Image (cartoon, rainbow, N blue to C red; front, side):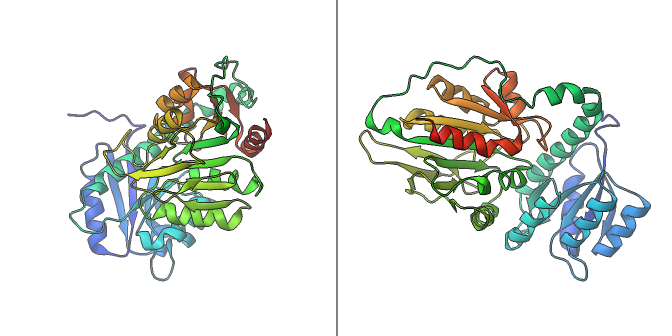
Length: 365
């Protein structure tokens, strides 16, 4: 029998107006150790009453509900119950509003299963539970170590940079920025991409761990706020300066570039999950290390797990510069920590200085 510590036990409230979905989530959570469903509510108002009486550790919150929708509930929870974590459970048709929810403080989003027989729900819920538990552990030691973390807000880790040994072909004057991000990513990207100029001399490729459909709305949201052109990547699309391409959910993104070709092109494929993810940061980074002859900058931002670490290793072997987001500004300090602890980070940069770092890299010839 699995023993669950008090810290890892999670009391969960399910908020959804569809009884079939309620029951499916209840049955799925019953298979995840340490999770206790303490309540099920069919409306936002009932959910707020429940939280006021018996605050749970986690609320699984539907976006689309009558009377009071998920966004309205989330705003009140963020204001009056900041210690309660929220994961959005929503259909792809609600992706735009789900992204609004993430910007309001929801930790992550889980796609609603299209059928009752969906086998992805347990995987998605289990990952979400891991995110919430990681957040709780971080809160436990954050106060004791705050002075140390403030010291990491410098832009140098002291890790020696590898020699820059990139090819000297004509294409080497090009430059590419690759970004890997997961939990907390949409909010973080909204503070980086819109701060970049339209005439940036680098192309940018982004892997954000999100389900199919949601990355489409993420790209559209960023594009509407940015000077640069931001779009969800398409197979065969050119990688050109001044454009940000976001890997579509459900597909690994790689690049190809033949010797002497004018520019690199995107290749999308399904394939198996890597690091429990598709798209995978490692898959993109390793492809770039293999195929891109120009100057390279990798940035690993907030997120759970280790995706990106091995890709950064390959990129640094090619002479790329490695940047990680600082701990204090991360929602989940997992992916950047993995890079730092492997001694693969050249610079630790605070979130609000990442755009400036990208600009300086782009301008450095």
